[in-house]
Image 1: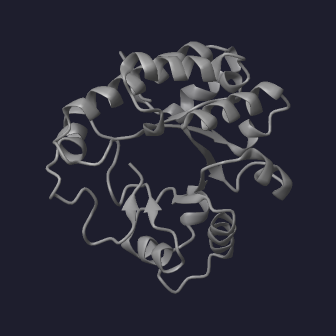
Image 2 (image 1 turned 120 degrees about the horizontal axis):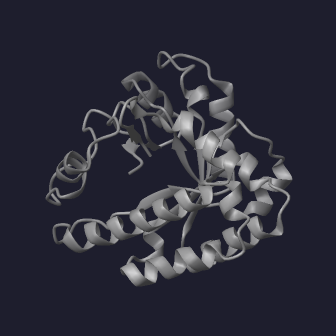
Length: 236
């Protein structure tokens, strides 16, 4: 999300998303984002070159949204209306959001996952989780917070929390994505330790839609869609 303000220019979501959550307007904003993302992903899959792998999209959900009883039903219905395979939709929430004391959060995530939607824990390591809660959540993907990745400067550095998170995710049969990968050294460090998916400025900064489509979506199957110098694939 980017807010193109008429006088202040482009405003980061770091500034306005917390305000939306505090005011309750995150519900309307989140619904709009969900609709836009699902519709776009369906259009991209219909228009992609023949033989290219399916294109998936991941959408962040706040605790307020997940606490809404019909959130899962709405997401599933939107996919059906747009013609998007549910396996190509991901829903991401933070540790804190997943830990909200509401039965609806667990109900929605379980219903989405049962339908085939990929469920990810965003910013792992920054919230409040017990090992018991992690096993109870029935996740698909763990995303390691960028704050831990930023401590890796060279391939010989120690980053025990990242190393532990990778081992924990692997032991739990979770997909693991490193957030905030900005250097080749970080990518090399991760792949040696068993993390093969990443997102960050090493691969791309936020892009205008037309540039994103030309560089990442509408590419021929024989073209590589990640930086060939990095064995860590970007989590698209």
